[in-house]
Every structure is written in C-alpha cells, then in structure tokens.
Image 1 (cartoon, chains in turn brown, blue, green):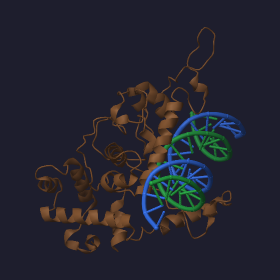
Image 2 (image 1 turned 135 degrees about the horizontal axis):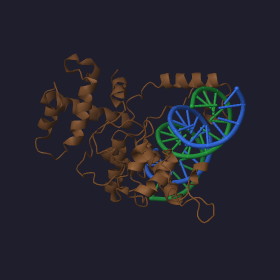
Image 3 (image 1 turned 90 degrees about the vertical axis):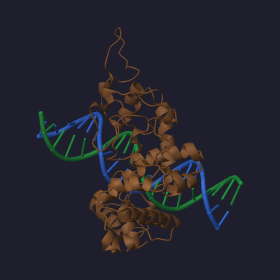
Image 4 (image 1 turned 60 degrees about the vertical axis):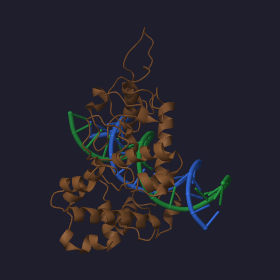
Length: 289
DNA sequence: CCCATCAGCCCGATGTCCGT
DNA sequence: ACGGACATCGGGCTGATGGG
C-alpha cells in the first residue's frame, strides 16, 4: 500500500484523483461494469490502475482508522498555531490544552459529500451507530469524528427548531415593518441578510419547511432570497447548511443543500470518497512515506 | 475494555459598532 | 464611506464519564 507515492508509473495527478472520486460517487457499487465506467471517467488511467488505486485508497483508510498508520504530520499545523498563540500574546484562559507538546489538530471541515454520506449512514445504520457509519458510509472519518459531527449536527438542528422564529443576534435591521404603530420585530426578518444564523434560521424558515432532523424528507424549496448573497465558502441555505465548511466541488443543482432530499440511496455507500476540499490524498501520502 | 455521549476548548469567519 | 476593534457564532477536536 505504500505504492501511492513510490510507484511513479502510476502517478496520480490531482485532477485524476478528483475524477476518480467523482467517478466512484457516480457509479455505485452495484453498477454494471462499474470499474470500466470509472476507468472511462478517469483520463489516462487503465482499468487495472483504477482498481489498484481503489484498493490502495481503501486500505489506507482502513489502516488509518485502525490506528496502524501514524497520523499525518500535524506539526506544521501545531507550528502555526503555536506561532499564532505567541503572536497573540497570552495563552488563553487556563486551557488544559496547554500541555505544551500536545497541540490541537486543525480540523478538516466536513464536505457536503461527507455530510450527505453521514445522513445516509444515519438512515441506514441508525442514529448512534457511529462505528458502522464510519466504516460503511463516511469512510473518510473515524467513529469519533462522526460522533462529534453528529453531536454538533444535533445541536444545530435543535437550535434551529428552538430559534426558528427568532434571530440569535438582534439587529436594527430586524425591524422591517411597523404595524399600527406597534413597533415590533416581525416573526422572521425579511431581510436577506446572509449571516449564518440568519440564513439558517430566518432564511431557512422562510425557504424551507420546519427543519426536522430528517431533512432527507424535507427538501427545502428553492429560494432566490437565501441564495442571493452567498457567504464566501459557505453552502447556502437549508437546515443543515452550516454544518459543513467550504468549497464543495460536487456538480450539483444550484440550490443543493445538506440533507436535501433525493439523494439516491445508491450513491456511494461504503466507498471511500473525498469530494470537496478534503485532502485525504495528502494524508495518504503521509501514511505512505 | 470499548464505545457512545457530553461538555468544554479553540479557532476561524462574520456581523456590528464606532471612530476617523 | 471606510476601516479597525470587538462580539458572536459555528464547527472541529479532545478529555471525561458512564454504560454494555
């Protein structure tokens, strides 16, 4: 499995990697002639190379999950955070993380693809079975990471329900109309302010049905308003929209949101995929060094 | 002992305020 | 109008804890 970096004959460019991942997602496991199709989608790679790459990838993830592979060298991250800390001056409030050598790893934002897989995994394995979800659905994440993501996801959903009709952060712009001299904020701001909170609470409630946890069943209606002023690097709108970070390179409908309905159940279950900005290939490189 | 859950910390991004 | 400072929020990671 250490061939990734070493076997120059089968060097994979970033583009090829991406094409490979997308092809994996496009052609489900049970697809007829799956590998032929995938090979066709990845320029410059033969069927054999495709298969080998898949095995390597799968192996890597398995090894990483199993803890056999030393984690990527996060020293660079640690270095930068250390630098930041020192630049910022005082170390923050008695952080127990001040165990000098143990710097917190920098988080890799969840991609929309991962989150979709997560939702599918929940659907398939049930809420709480993070291990199975990690193993068969979101293979790019450890059970712990899945659980952590789920925790935040749940909190997010709860808060959305709780705050469906009120903004977290008040603003003078919340006042958008006056009713019979009674100056009161509207049930929900009409402003198309695209702050996370606004977009997800106000915007979402305007555009989508009440955010139930199972958003797969709750596709938000298209809303020009919420999508009008996207925040850089953030998927727009939708109940779970801010659960994930940045730049999703999926070719998807314009208003694709997390948990947005008809994700084909056949899409990529149990297949390593890292659409979006996640640089797992990098991690594998580490793993193979 | 393993795993799930919870709580808290940390950091980056964004919104708002305020001085110029 | 613009830009900096500060406040707030969201998301990811980690440690503690409890249950099977």
